[in-house]
Length: 208
Image (tube, rainbow, N blue to C red; front, top):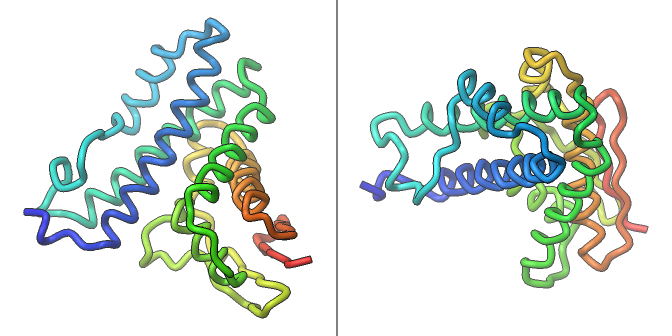
């Protein structure tokens, strides 16, 4: 059965599981503060479905591989937006605490990679080996400049806003969390790299 699965399917599944783990770490902070995490999880699961665990070849719908992966991305994005919004609005977990979780995750992922003479384009590609931006066919990001000193990409569309709007939240929260992940990832590279994002969706990595 797994013969129908390619690298891209495992690549997407691994990104989904990374975000599931980030969400679990956020919920663990709330749990340690005696917040009723189980009720919160039940609410978001009722809307977006539960997390799927196990080896991809054992859990995926082999008759609808693309649709199944898309549904899993929507599920984790929806639950992340819902739970994060509720926790922030309830003043249970601060955005700064969530940012630290993402920053630590980024650093951990970089530390797990083999050291190499990465170009800025390599770093860009590595970032989106981990960060979710829809399915590959969505073509969310476009590199508009790439040289030895600077790489710039633009966000063509935002696929995350709908989840935060449905939860009554602000999608800027999502981008702050992802910024923290990227900064943690690049900081752990050992290089003098600077990352910036503007409100219009322009992202820049510079080598100092």
